[in-house]
Image (cartoon, rainbow, N blue to C red; front, side, top):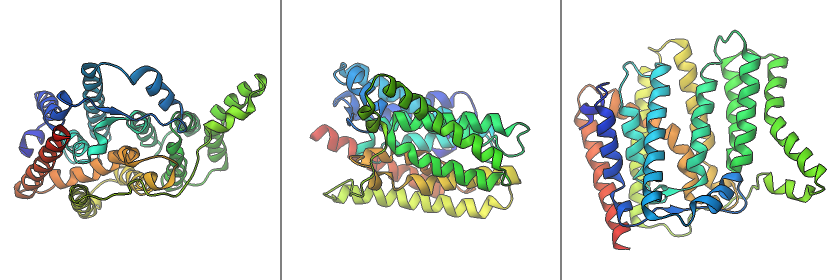
Length: 327
């Protein structure tokens, strides 16, 4: 099956749509859960006000549409920046497959919406290297991050990602750092001014991230351990193939991969750091996980290992669907 998505034919969009429906077949019998915590940003307010309570059909179409669009968007960004030797639909295939591995990711959450901002941010960061006007780009990037934190508090970790990416991609320049930090702070400056003028400064605190070290899950089932083990195996294999082929890439592409690696390391701890994040917040880490896991399906010349992992993921997803329907 993997060979179908190694082709860059437009017909693969149809196959991706079928894959997305097949991975989440259970949604046609069990409506996707909508997670809307009250203290993690504007996205939660939006979900609670406008998404919770919608008919099951609308929720299913919304969830599948978001997953499909994000998969295509991710695939387009990676192809545009030539992060793989050939333009394929393997990254989109991998992203869709992995959304079905963890049962908690078959839900509509703030983290899922935050992925739109995450993809936008990575596309901006990938333009930093040798950019003729970096200050404008950095200021806009800072604005994206500031707005992201207001919309979903765990995205505050993206500040670390951008600072490390700027250190890696460009030589130190005080003016560039100041411009970036100004962009990050500006949305909060306007938010503070708004509440100050309304004499409601106490509400401003609710837009600041709340940090609390915690375990996202209290009970670990065998099925969850199998799912996490599969994700770990595919990710480690992807990191191995990345290291093998990294030296063959041009400098700019290596820089982009370095930024993606930074994003992976920084975003993985999200469920353990922020208050009431839950395992569904790890959906943000799915972007870098899917990118590196795509190497496992893209680089091996023989398709034995990619096909084996593909069908193993199908088995895990089928079992997860059965558990959803049974419960």
